[in-house]
Length: 537
Picture (spheres, rainbow, N blue to C red):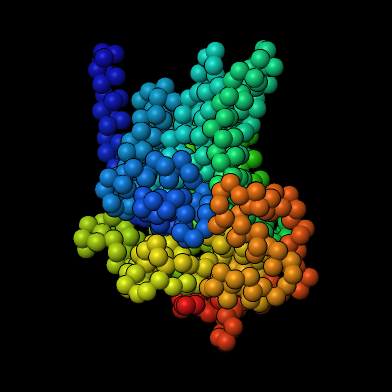
């Protein structure tokens, strides 16, 4: 066999592998309920209302500005956020696969084996679509890995710029790359010069966005981050929820967990890859800090990508390579959730830990194959409800699932989010006890619902009156108002002003409505399966 033929054969194998990835994408592509939160912001922005979810206030309800800005022109051109997100995700998957091969030295046995392993990993396949930012995060992580491996006079600049893009795509993604970024600066010969000429300029996009966010939204971080930090959990409870995520992967997505552990282990044994492995380890420390997540697999996809790149680069012995291949052959049953996933795929239940298979929840209405079959992505009951509300006079509503219904209801409907992801006032209050992971419900303080419906400050507690006033100033007043700028300063630096003396965080429910459930999945006093929508006016 000639070298040219050998190379051609390897690229043929790579092409077949790419086709397998797109088969998996075809079988599994979907859009999540949470994606419609961003879709509503994009719709309002295109309509001229600004980067707003409710058009009466400036609140950053999205955690992925880069993904949103990349998606927005496609939505503007097509008027279809569903297919725009699916198409963008498919394009990014192709870019990701090609970049992975480049990062691992081209198509050869080890790189093809490493890349093909992702087909066994539901965490990666599920979040190669979903309408969320993961596909772009995957691409940026591979670009970072390539820049880390490549000696270049401006290596630190490239790494810091990619870190900034990761921050813009999802702020916590920088946890994965922070050790390598710091190590690259530490290894520089002229650290002060590199710091000034490369490191800091590369981070400028992240700094500028943070300053813009502080000025425009009144907070340097997304409202979703504020809502999830004040979750009322102890350190032990946060650690338990992070452990639950690992246990869930062990029980339902073992290839993902094994691959991450293998990448971490082999990475730590190689000096050149140790900072990358340290990022993987640091990520799990971060999960302990934030208390895990409710979306099965989503928060494991990032470290999984780094692990695959480590395994495809590390130079494994023949024994390890053969063992790896045999393990994949022995675990082909995992492909039934990815490449061989049926059109009937469905898992509509929440585990006792609060974790759920989100694709399993929404695939029957929002899976691409189902949408092609039904010629519509607007058949989910929550979307149908919102479409009916769109035809009603403008009103204020409260609902616990704010994605599809709020998007379908249009910009004239105003929404209160009891989970506080889109509600800046509630986000600054402690969450109730026994909240489901990632669903940190807030009790409505006395007078809050009336205030939200009328715009008047009817809060009973003095500290909460101050909070309401400053929130309304920060999110609704003229951008350049000095009074508004003073309120932003207080909200970010004088938080003790807003600590209420009398606030029962467990007093969930709606005034005048009986509380029928306080379970982990309940909301506003109703069982999770009820999905109650409250109309205030």
